[in-house]
Image (cartoon, rainbow over all chains, first blue to last red; front, top):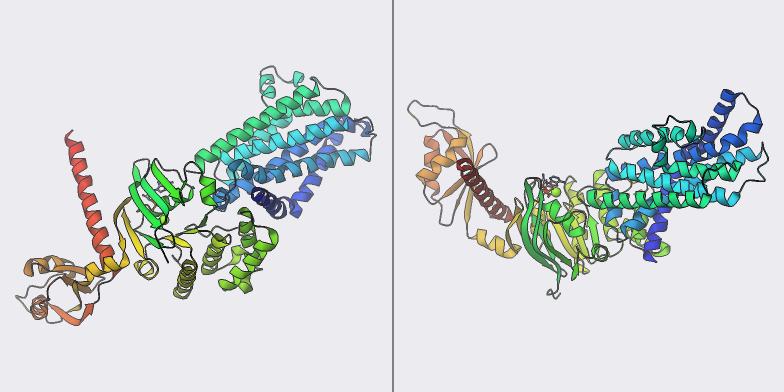
Length: 245
Length: 341
Ligand SMILES: Nc1ncnc2c1ncn2[C@@H]1O[C@H](COP(=O)(O)OP(=O)(O)OP(=O)(O)O)[C@@H](O)[C@H]1O
Ligand SMILES: [Mg+2]
């Protein structure tokens, strides 16, 4: 019980002080809108094309929504040493890290649905597999949050965290089959695609929205869950090794 | 208060950073209800020790028990009993005073109503009631320090660890903090504090450990430590160079004086204090007239002579000075051996 009071209050504090700040919220709305418009201008096609680019926009919104704040929530607090207070609190390290990342996961999920809601005004989405779609958005959110966590605990400066996470994020946009199929990539880049979690999440989204998946959703989701466990486990180990010095 | 239960037990604690032995095998214990001081110069290993005790750093060797709990095996259970004031005031700058305290209470599992009531109580106690709604980031250094201490005791810990609680803040605030710590101790909290202010230790602590270069060189009650030096006689002389530099007189620099005096007055220890003062220390009566004559012959006027009541400061300087000297010698011997090999 005591542990959950701590968990809930850490989450609430981060939500109020970092995630739900106006610039962050407006970013969550403008970001998918900007990408959607860019694709329209580029392709010159009409609204009918919205469905084909929707999985990519959703995945990107989740990816950028989750990873953008972790550098602040974790690296900044580490630098300011307030993080030491959290490490010294009588709560298990796993619970602490979950509390610090839950906000990012929730924001990621919310950001993921922003383009879906926008698209619903333009095209008919009645045949989307909502269950699959929700599961995919959730697991993409968790896996990219934990990837961001991994980055945040591996560096010591906020700017390093941001640079390092861009180093991951931008290639992922192109390598994970969000907008062009992986098969269209140069053959030497293709193995890279399969070690990135977003590839599997994007495939579920293509299936849920356009019935165009390469692999069964169950398999994709299981692989994504595997990535989540690995990233989280490695991050916890890094914190134990480096921060409790 | 009965003080026989040991609440902190430390055995053979050691920690090395690269080649630096920050903590070099220390043993001590602190009894329940005691105020225990950890005194030492910069880099002595105070912060490293406190961080190992509280679970922020790891020991290479040794054992720490808090209220019987093995801290290596069960750090979280031990942390529940601790309040921690780190050497830097590290609360959340974007939260106000009240929110910071309430949040810290929540970290220890306190419920909403309970921690809010306690936060108000502490803000009043530390004279921060008016600043409760201001952001911590905008506090002055002294206010930050007070709020950091308040945050450490919100959950009424059994043991309070403070790393240099009053360093860098004004005299009045430091005094207020000391009084609050005294009250806290009177109500049963065990206090472990590090400091390099001798006076602070003298006023607050019952027992102190002197730590130098990662080693504890002495642990004793303030009473015993001071008793040792109080047998000593200390006279402080303020000197000024006299104007009539007559030919043939043995004029010399102030820095050479202690050496010359030691030769001329065997059995008496001399040390120069600040730029123009000199101290003579002896267990016997001091020969004041010959001393003044000796100085005058060397172009030094004695403008003031006063008797100093030896305090813990003398003990500290003696003990750490001797310890540092010894360590320097050991190091040199080690190097010489290493050089030959
Ligand atoms: N994380 C670290 N990495 C490397 N060396 C360290 C580390 N922490 C402490 N040290 C070294 O260990 C020694 C003891 O440091 P510590 O901070 O414990 O001293 P201190 O007694 O608290 O000093 P001060 O009065 O300046 O606060 C110093 O030589 C310091 O340089
Ligand atoms: Mg220190």
